[in-house]
Image (spheres, rainbow, N blue to C red):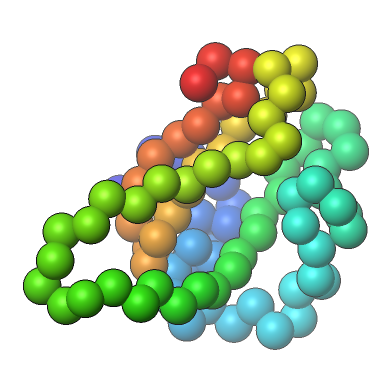
Length: 90
């Protein structure tokens, strides 16, 4: 179970196959990011071409990550919450 209880979590927007065709395009930093206090939810897809049956570490990097930028991130992959990131904390 996800701990946040955000509206997007409650409606299943973090789950594969959620109908997001009506969502506006944008990114967290340009094209509509959060301009003040509030919550935005972004989705994306990608192809991961790795050899089968291998254990490969993967890194997710947030740039730019100026320490004075105050934001928090919850990361989901295929509906599973993998982690949280707080920019001015780490």
